[in-house]
Image (cartoon, rainbow, N blue to C red; front, side, top):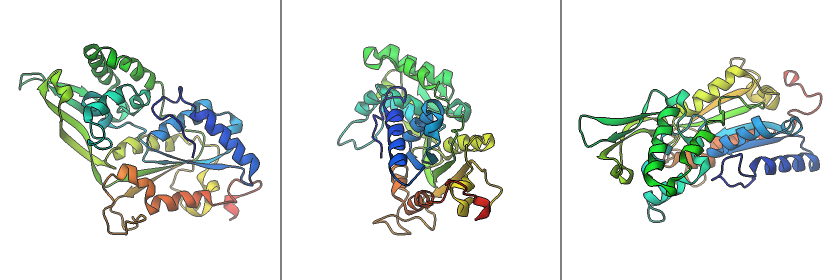
Length: 324
């Protein structure tokens, strides 16, 4: 793996530079001419920036494909809740909700995870009490409403929340709707009711210390709703922008199914699927708890990545998927 400071935006950390160095080292010093990239959650957003904005043509030529696991390409409404009032992210015995909130506000990469207007623009993400039961202050998943909410917090809290509006504006420049120029397999977790809308009863600003009630659920992986990833991956399929088709990367899996996109494949992994298992958790066990994090360790995910990585013939000189 390539470690990086996930708290920072991709323009501020060293992920792109370090990953390019690793790609060139591996492909120049082993028998492998290309490397398969696998990313999880926020790492996918960081990596798409590298592929679309930073990597040279020479570096891109060393990428076999991207396996995007649990990708929040369209954002996660839960991040708006975290920035507003906090949430249990690790354990409340280790860090309180308010400490999580204050930490997230100072983390530039968190703003990349706010709900995308193209996916959640018509949805109420946060509904705040005003002291009048008949009047509520609703914030939709639009860039304007999210920006207004963050500026409201920043103006009230002061220096401790400084830069929230600026970080949000910077995050909008990271365009996740542009397909990366490499084959992509989107691995989307499903089967878990995932929170997408939150209500607060206390008036402002007391609501920033309140535990909200959940107003609405959607199918997802506990953190990322299915439509967050699927909307963007489906859009990428229509762009057909990759340098090499998936049938070239893995002919046995993709060649015989012409209805699939040659550049982007969408794979849904339901936590209650009949093939779901993991080390220490056999089939039929509880695979839905903390699924967003634990999807990495599930056997279907591992098998999919291995099936792509171990195809040593893919993309070799004079290799033809159609001839296999």
